[in-house]
Image (cartoon, rainbow over all chains, first blue to last red; front, side, top):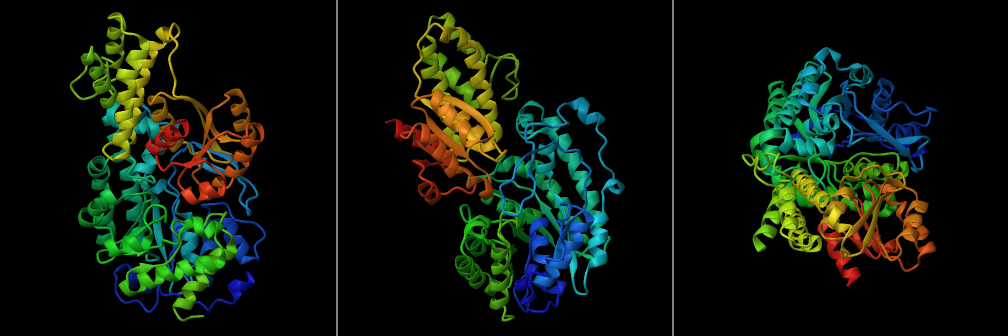
Length: 358
Length: 222
């Protein structure tokens, strides 16, 4: 282990602490959450592993469990592999820890570009979804820890399958194609969420659907409510029927649809915050009495900031969030490989100090 | 004459590129931008006047409505298609006229960055506002920006980045640009970029959205 990891308090995970915070009940301390920690950062902090595991693999899931347990987390997000054939591109990666290229979703190419292609498309069945990372992570869970079952979103997958610009134009040119792809994706996600909920090791369900840009929603709030919200309602119904909370990760400025997410969809918690869009404290003041709030330590700050500035910012967020009992601390998005491991540890140590553990 | 400009503007705003499109619903068979531009040319209106009184106001209105969150990416894209349908009809006439341009704007995402949705929206709105846009594409090395500056003297350059890890490639691009053309003005934007960061790296401007980019360019060009 990294020496600073060794100096952290001994873990005593209890997933009920996380669930208490999601339910805005008084937890004994502010819990931690992370959407993802890049395998290269995981490898650096574990120190005893020479090579980073492949992103999304069972090995990566197990290493995440090992690391996050040691860092003081109660829950670990894990993703089953949905076998959509997605077009990816790559470019050089200048990140300090990187030894390779960075992969990017190709927003221009897609395989579902016509009614005929949609009609012929073989949507993955529930059994086609690769749960090996989930099973491996479940087997590696220390006592008291649980998993959060994650799926990418309806809009995200639809734009990947059609191509982003083509999907956007299909909303006008071929609305049946757009609706058909949304429904196809929605069915696959429903089946995956159902399967997550059969597992005792899974304590919560997490959907990641980036709906916003820096300035507003990508598509109109009305289209979101007509096209996506019906599926979100189904996901929440599945989670709640199995007594699991439903967490939403959505990047960008989505203020215009937050009332629908809270009042209509019934999400239990919101994740993804950027200081240049909505600082997490601002969101807590607006929605903290209705839903739990997760993360919010800006990734830009974690990437480029000094450790003292990070500690100061984390403390300010904790001072605002802890009294609500519905705050779970973490990065605004995730820990990519361009966040220095030392900065990530500063966030973890600051939370431990705030909780009286250090 | 005003009516035909209003028709062109309205068709651009609603994305009605040509008669074949059923956008807005129920409009199939009715003229769109292509037909109205064709009609305007047949009436002897110059390409420059059609552009400046019909098409550019249409696209500028689209930009304003996008900035005001009245319309969103799909609506901007169908409006851009309508604008290009008009350009296609105007193209032969452009060859015979000296069409004035607001200036040249070179834009690209910086090295390592392949995300170009924001860049493309900026290009659409600026082109619709009468700027000549030279789109260098994605993952542009500093040398590519420098070569474009040499090729387009007096241009303004826009740098776009999605991630913190690619945003930090902006200073190298600016240095390469200024090494070959020291007075070149540079505008930066993208998800992690802030006005403070723009100042820190020596950019001349920062834009939060396409209309912000247009306003910044108009200030720089004034």
